[in-house]
Amino acid sequence: MGEMVLEEACRRAKDWQGRLATDTPLAVCVNLSARQFREPGLAGTVSHILKETGLDPACLHLEITETAAMSDALATVSALEELKTLGVRLVIDDFGTGYSSLSYLQRFPVDYVKIDRSFVADLEGDPGATALVAGMIDLAHALGIKVIAEGVEGAGQLERLEAMECDLAQGYYFSDVLPGEAMDEWLSAVRDDG
Image (cartoon, rainbow, N blue to C red):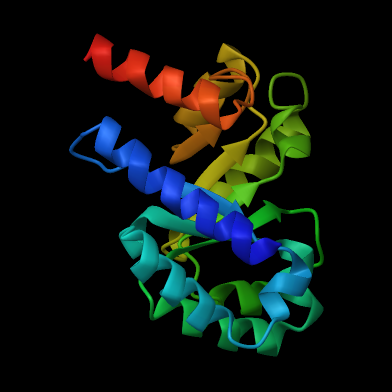
């Protein structure tokens, strides 16, 4: 099932890129389950799907939760290194909610950490949450890792994240979750608006 989802996501991303020609090609993020991440031959499967769909590896972002990454940190380093050789982008999801060892975070060859929505939700009213998010952003940047904040629901949260130099944000502030057909319409509208 996971392989079919990954293949469909890559096919759709390639199609959407063709519809929305921009200087920065559209990328797609795919969550890997802990089980899928531990499957032998995952890198080979990903490589095959990228070749079959024609998607540039840099446009595929594979996400694994912090908890899954830390369940066997040594094996995670090896699996991430193998995936990294393909040219895909790697993301640690739900950052800050697991039992991450900072020494392993330094060793994981990841491109992004995604700060969990539970921290972002309290940005406007809780100085502690603000300090934690700012610290996570600074730590990630010091390690050469970009940061995505998830669960952004208001302009105030976005303004605070921008002030903290967070790299990217996602959430209902930008759009509700869209099924594939609605995404097709949204991309057409974006293309038509220039």
